Image (cartoon, rainbow, N blue to C red; front, top):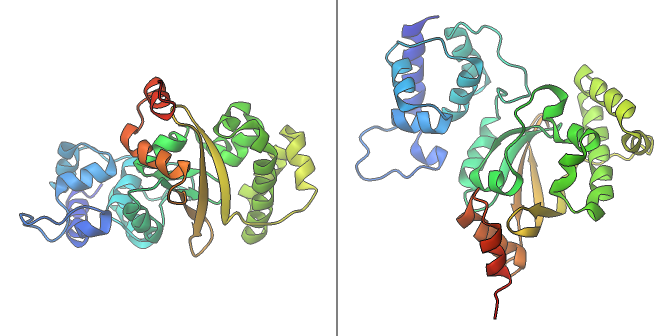
Length: 290
């Protein structure tokens, strides 16, 4: 591991990122043009002391997960991300899926600016890569698993518990949408092995999937109206929008509600309660007594 070059590269990339690029205030007392060390650490989910040691050319070899988090925090492009891995003596970058996947910088930049609405970046197989706090509060964190089970479309057809996010009467709609979307993804990818294996497994494990796959309906999910079951707020009606990366492998999803609707009021309340479980308090607000 080249500690000296790794440290110099991290410093150079940190100096290049402006606070506004990652949704941070500039402030009148800022002495550096780019990010502070503690800001990079916070964005990457690391301790400030650990990141400082890396920039000083000391410390243990970073894991692939740490490197992926730093690449996201520093808004590295694909070449820069690969270079970071080489400097850390991790010559093979992680696959383009899973928690170590490299999020497209353009999508990540937009996600940083979506601070008042739930938003997240997912893969075309519905694997969550990164969420903002409101999305985590609304949808819950992604599962700590790898492989096909990390994708929500896989869990939808193999794990009944995954469907608790939506009311039962909406399940047939979401099943059709997931399958039609996967048909479109399979066509876009040209039948690559990852999609082929996923389809084969789902056809074996789910009669519902197999039946819907044979309809050959094809439609990327660009927008959708959803009713999401939240543990504290009850059923939240929202519109879901998608923005696709240039290669179609990643999507930025964000959720909105028309002004003046109950969904809009619930989103405002969501920003207050965060990830706390305030079921009784919230129900009291929604259904005041007396």
